[in-house]
Each structure stands twice: as structure tokens, then as C-alpha cells.
Amino acid sequence: MYLKKIEIQGFKSFANKIKLDFHDGITGIVGPNGSGKSNIGDAVRWVLGEQRAKQLRGASMQDVIFAGTENRKPLSYASVSITLDNTDHSLAIDFEEVTVTRRVYRSGESEYLINGMPCRLKDIHELFYDTGIGKEGYSIIGQGQIDRILSGKPEERRELFDEAAGIVKFKRRKATAQKK
Ligand code: ATP
Ligand code: MG
Image (cartoon, rainbow, N blue to C red; front, side, top):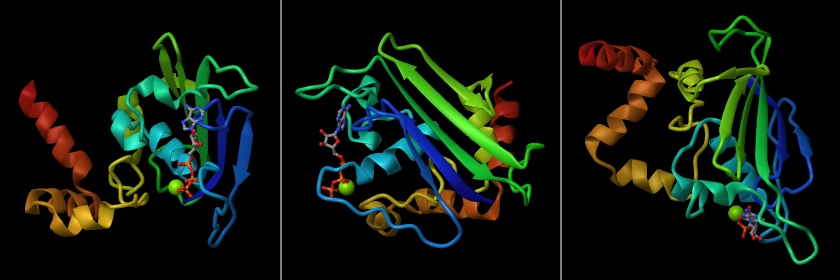
């Protein structure tokens, strides 16, 4: 499984629709300060279901919507899609290609889609449990995260190992069953 494509529109500094294609190997994103490199990482974290505005370097969740510039009006919604190659069926879904989309409107309304079908945030979390890709996964290492892992509490470090060992989904299911 690998990331094939990111499409961003109205998210943070990306007013126009942009499409980034990724290929095998390493891709570097370079650009001057403030040009939006980190915003691309934020977009990926956001589409994977990040709910904490602070993690996205904003104060409120609406801050992800393009806020306008001197010569461009603010937009009314933000939309991000990522497409993953699933020919190895790492994701437990019967598609060779999986596109996850998240949209949010200034009114507060939001939606999630998997391959164009509306779904719940929970479905997105479940799709990515134990793959290392979820918003808590280790496939996105943000600035300062290595420090947090090294100096974190043992329980927090344990969560990382649980994810790598592929047992998070069982723990979540157990917790849900015990609540019922
Ligand atoms: P650096 O090299 O300093 O890390 P960077 O390329 O990572 O820079 P980002 O942090 O991704 O840059 O982008 C910051 C830019 O995004 C700022 O100019 C900021 O004004 C803009 N930005 C963030 N949120 C929004 C928003 N909602 N609407 C418009 N622009 C935004
Ligand atoms: Mg940056």
C-alpha cells in the first residue's frame, strides 16, 4: 500500500484545487518558508480524522478553511482527498484503490467519504487501525513527535507498539463490548 495522490481544495493556503501525484520511492516537497509545505502534512492528518485544531496549528476547526488574502476572497469550504494504492489489500476493503475524502463547511457541517460513499468518522478510523496510517499512526512524524515518544509516559509508548503489533482494533472492540 502506498500514497498515490492528494487532492486539496480550500484547505489552509490552497485556495485553488491542487493535485499531487506520488510515485514509488521518496518524494521531497521543497519551497520557501510559509509556502505551504507543512499544510500538506496537515491536510493528510486532517483527512485521516484529526479532530484537534491544535494538532493542525489552528485555534478552531474552521481555521482549516482558506481564510482569504488581500486579493482573494475567503472560501466557504475545505476539501481534502487522499488516494491509496491497495493492490496488496493491506486495507480490509474490497477495492484496489481507496480514496478517503473529508469536507468541512463554514456552517460547521462536515462529511467523510470512502470511495465517494458517505461514511462516519468511525469507519475511517476502523479502516486504518493497525496499519500505522491513522491519525495516531506513526506514518506521519510531526515536528517534536520523536521527543514526545522518547520522553513520553510508558503507557503512551505502549500505544505505539500496540499499533505496530496490530492489536489496536481488538483493544478498541473489547472496550466497546465492555461498555455495552
Ligand atoms: P516553513 O518552511 O516555515 O515550515 P511551510 O512551507 O511549512 O513553511 P506552512 O506552515 O505550510 O508553510 O504554511 C503557512 C502559510 O499558510 C502561512 O502563510 C499562512 O498564512 C497560510 N495559511 C494557514 N492557514 C490558512 C488559511 N486558513 N487560509 C489561508 N492561508 C492560510
Ligand atoms: Mg513547515
